[in-house]
Image 1 (cartoon, rainbow, N blue to C red):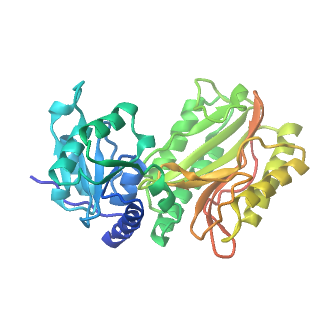
Image 2 (cartoon, rainbow, N blue to C red; image 1 turned 60 degrees about the vertical axis):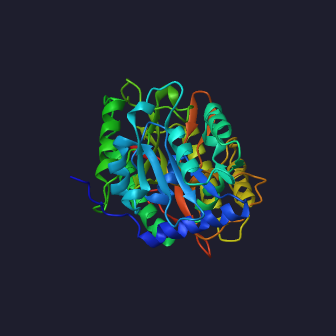
Length: 389
């Protein structure tokens, strides 16, 4: 029995609006057909969030309203159910292309381009998302085509969110908040880090306000001797009296991801921890005060750095980056010297994590939205150093 359409996250008009923006960029670059391979971009243009661990391509043609999604045959039902697209726009390739040293799913994409008469013009590829072998396959099998690099073009389009997207990001932020508060409830001396993560992840899955989490972004829990490391997960250790825990998690709704960081201390915090909390909190608040439509991104970063340095801590890492689908958006970086201008409905993870020594660091952050007159802080967990007994 054929699978039926599932509930759509956004209306069809929202996806057609996004596709129209992509096609406008295609026209400017003289691209007749675009092969989209990055997962976040596939989600953005179709609504598909199902992971496929095999090669696939979404072909956007200037001639067609809908794109064509080409992927492994067994992944076709999920792609059809999740997306706004018609059934004939989701095409499965045969199992013979799996584990084949000479051919793979990209050959099916190339075959489609050839059969559809799209192989003699400009072909856009996300080259930064393709292996060298894959890029060479496209070039070798499409000798008449003009290969045009489309890497990060869709990322730039995604930077400014629609109001519909912002609504989903608010839902994701509420889930992140719930995870932070659950951590404060369960972390205690003698508890295994793994058991604390199980409670936190369970909360991220159950969600908030009746909206469940739809994916688990990797949670980073850095405790004990590992608080100077930003990107490690939980260990086999247990929490102890005097332990510090740096936690970075994210709520996820239909691919849209809202991260948050908070720091916890079991028992009385050290003087150093209290001082860095004060400095990083000052930097966070200075950054939030600087955000508004029309502001220069580099000026916001400058305000953050000056605030932390006045209180004795130099933050070496950038204080934030763009967020949306799948945590980060590469083309927005909150760094000094960045002359890009903030626009309404840009969204950022303003991240005041600071790693001072190899064995000491601290984290606090918020997911935020740029507004015409200032900033909306999407995450709303208490902006404090959590002291646990």
